[in-house]
Length: 574
Image 1 (tube, rainbow, N blue to C red):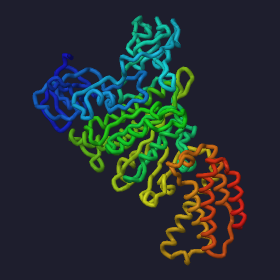
Image 2 (cartoon, helix red, strand yellow):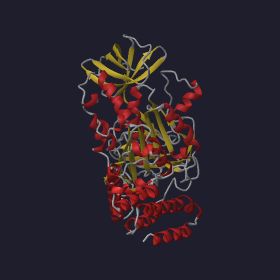
Image 3 (cartoon, one colour):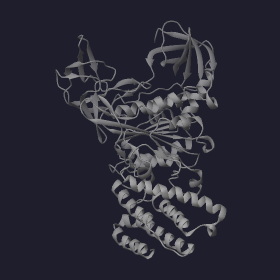
Image 4 (tube, rainbow, N blue to C red):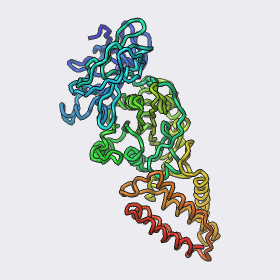
């Protein structure tokens, strides 16, 4: 037990005031001693000899005068082999292991190791005796599922070290000393396969941070073509409840061309989280043919869990993502939803009686959002490899109002904005990304000239649609009406995508280029129709031909025959 013990003098929900002696630090972990149970907490404010702590558990049973033990360590996660395919809470407690031991009703004060200390891993040394290494250098590797898990010099070590001794190839537990490193001043450090890192401090054990330029293919057409994401970039998906934010993230996690997917269910409704937990282990990974969970990590903190743990879950997920990025892998972090993370900050700020900002959010809301997204990036490692961390967060603005603080704070720092529309969702147009509101700073693999032309058609078609609501079709010229039909055609055959169809759910980059060039050819064509009914009938027939082409012909390989049918329709429309 630590010698640094404090005493509770105040209790405000999940926050407690503790009088202490000695020295403590911001973000230090402390434990409320409640009988045989130890409730984990974190120091969030210090005023003189009184510290304010947020408790990561329900505080039922705590009373004034109870003892609090300060650990002297910051809130950290364990990093090492055995993290992949795990389901953790916001403090990196393995939820399946807790459920096995205690059942489905989890008791308070339970803390289990994030990584199994009993399992043995086949270690293969890569560093040699006498070699000079620094933080992040590879000492060896083990097989973790489908990846080579690099065993690295802990990021906590600073400066150059000489490898004094390295373990031979063999099976070892993660706690086994696999290397001895000697610093310049002669101090020897024992290194195992597992170490800790504070979650609120970014991992910077790399040579250089690069600008994200390469497109990250998600295989969602409206994203990749019109509003692409870059590897190592950032994006957000704001939208009202029920507009399809979680479904888009699940499709992205399954089909995006990345190595590791980390899902941070931060404050989501329990029903949605349970659906994710049930579905992911049974989903087939199109990249490997195995279970999708083999390259997925889920950090799970539902809206029914304590608010303090919800606030920490985003940092836990980001730190684990940075760890795998340091191995030269492409990592995708999906945070759902950052609005509830911000709401957790608002609750904690209110208990601290801080001066509120807009809509009672803390005044530092925007800086916290920026700090989170700034941890994304593509980095060049010391061994010459590159790794990337792409961060995508959903935002759940009340009533779909994009002017609220969390959405606006996010828009200032992300590189792509995929705004979901309630009207499109109600019309069953999925993904319900609004092409008139969304934008991106990244470059698509589709020719920009074709994209610009298609966007002009969409904007002009929307204007004609609004005008027709006032004057009706009879008051619209045939030229404007054809522009409107072209925009509807583009929306139906390219922007909408059936996530449950085996062929249409994922569209590779080459197929997107090919199909979009055909669609752009239709948009550029001049049509001469004498009446609106003829124009409508033609475009509806052409639309159905393209849909059949997308859904059926590509799956069966008969798209060349379908092309002849489409070309015949186009020739007849002149």
